[in-house]
Amino acid sequence: MSEDLQARLAAVQKAITKRPPFVGGTLDVPDSDLKLYFGEVDDAYCLNFARATDEQLGKLAAACDPATFGVKQEDVLDESYRKAGKLDTDKFASLLKVAEYGLIDTVRDELLQEGADSTKQVACELYKLNVYGKDSFFKSHKDTPRSERMFGSLVVVLPTPHEGGALVLREDGREWTFDYAAEIANATKIAYVAFFGDIEHEVLTVKTGYRVTLTYNLYFDAAPKPARSESKPIPRSVVDADAPFREALQKLLQDPALLPKGGYLAFGLRFMYPCNQGMKLQRLRHHLKGADAMVARVCKELGLRGKLMVTYPGDDEFESEDVHIIMDAPFGDCYLTEDDSFQDLLLRNGGKRICAMGSDAGEDFIGGCTEALWVVPLSQFNEVKEAHGARTFS
Ligand SMILES: O=C(O)CCC(=O)C(=O)O
Ligand SMILES: [Fe+2]
View (cartoon, rainbow, N blue to C red):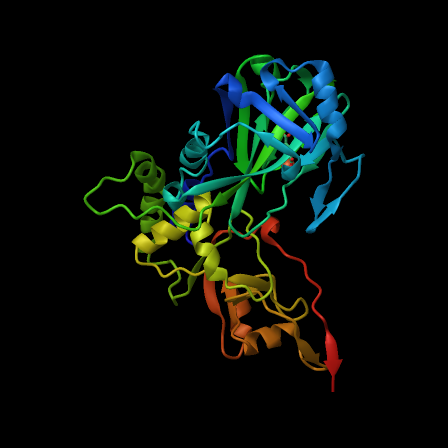
């Protein structure tokens, strides 16, 4: 690759930067909104988190079941990984109204600011109440997406006095710690942290007191806000966030050394999305997050036809790692004959072979191979390992 092209490519890559993957802070709320009712018919209690006694919180903790966590779509109980109590939403009623405080707007505007996301409606759904008593914790994990539209989680920490129990988020070797306990204790305040679903996070051990949280699932709502008409200015933040990438991509496209035989620009997705066999990948287009949404939007603006594709590695034995097979949708169950390979099957079912730009791997194939420049390389977090039923028949 020429030095000039390399520099232009590096500029595009640099422009695809992600904002911090969270938004957090504290918020004053009306005193009466901090009331919580819990229990069963004829055995129900009420407390106010701004001045809950130890005894009341002990009762709340005792009403909880041990908290489970999701592993491969199943709920697992393992107190060496997560020690906490939980109440499902049919066991309590909180008077907090997070949407009314503007919290959901804040999540949309700050967390999703980067992309077309910022114009999408965000819905939040109360998921659980958790009580982390002394020695409770939740080791590092990622939340299980509960639907295709779920993009993250919102944790609201209630103002009960406690020490420890900080929430730690980690991404790409960076780490952020949230501990608002001292700031909100006994006040008519809550703390909140909203983060994308693919961010690793952990709750450190609670040393004293009770840490009580409400967790909400964050969704893209089905109906996007009406598109702004041409005459109305779009918010500056959207324009500013896109401009460096748009300019860098335009320069890259003008370089005559770019894909002289034609081909694809390939952008590995930077966020994780739920995906299953046979699903229509294009449906995810409207749910792209942050920098992924920016890439899709700017490519469209510049007249590039974009498509979400799934990528399969080439055949280990005959093909170099520069070779991939791309498909419109994840491939379903299949039969292989004895002298068939999975890659051949993909190619017969609409798969297209691509090879990295400049690699000589493509010359080996009858029918050829389309060159692709990997602007954002594939990363492991979007890799799905699946055993394909290699049933053979002759
Ligand atoms: O309580 C927190 O801060 C986070 C809890 C959490 O990670 C979860 O419920 O999945
Ligand atoms: Fe979590």
